[in-house]
Structures are given as structure tokens and as C-alpha cells.
Length: 132
Image 1: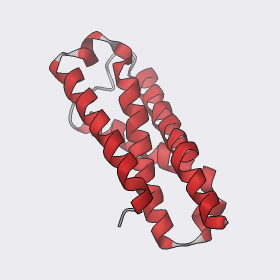
Image 2 (image 1 turned 180 degrees about the horizontal axis):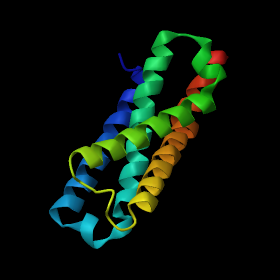
Image 3 (image 1 turned 90 degrees about the horizontal axis):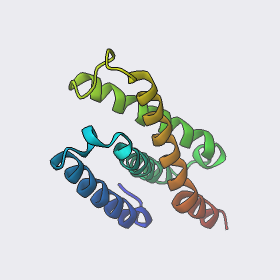
Image 4 (image 1 turned 120 degrees about the vertical axis):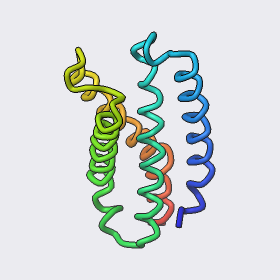
């Protein structure tokens, strides 16, 4: 069950990523503009972070809030890594492609940054409200 506080941000961020990904795919922007996937990785990290944190709040345990930055970093690493596995599995990219490792590293870093953006804007205030 998703924490009600996070439903609206998840919906808005998901809508933005849906529109931007659709436009980037339709207009071949991923192939013509190398940096165009950065915002989508940031948004993807933020969305998945909100979903994971929503589940963590439902468990009502102090483990997640006491280790909040570590938990967020873990989410970002897992999300970024799994996305790269997804791209490889569906031949969206290839390990033999020029710049593959640099691009994948940047994608994972962007996912982590997206997680921490969501953490500081949405999750940390919620943690502070719960402790009051």
C-alpha cells in the first residue's frame, strides 16, 4: 500500500516521465541528443524511491528512518543497476557500444541523484513529521 502523502508526487513524476520518454522516443531524441536521458533517470530514481519509502513507512520500523541515507543510497544503486540490466536484456544497449561503461555509470549516478532529490524534498520532511 502506498503512503497517501506520496501518491500525488508519484503520479506527477510518472506523468512527466511518460510524456518525456514518449516524446524522446517519437522524435528520436535519445539518438540525436546524448544528454536527453538524464532527466528520465533522475525522475525514475525519484519515483522508485518514493515507492520504496512508501513501503518502508508502512512497515513502521525505525530501521529505515535511522539508516535513511544508507537506505536511499541502496535504493539508488539497485534501481540504476537493474535498469542497466533491463537495457542489456532487451538490447536497448550493448556492452560493446562505444562509451557503454561511461554511459551506464552516469545513468546509475543519475538514478542515485534522483533518489536523493526525492529524499530531501519528500521523504526527509515526512520522517521529521513522524518523529514530532
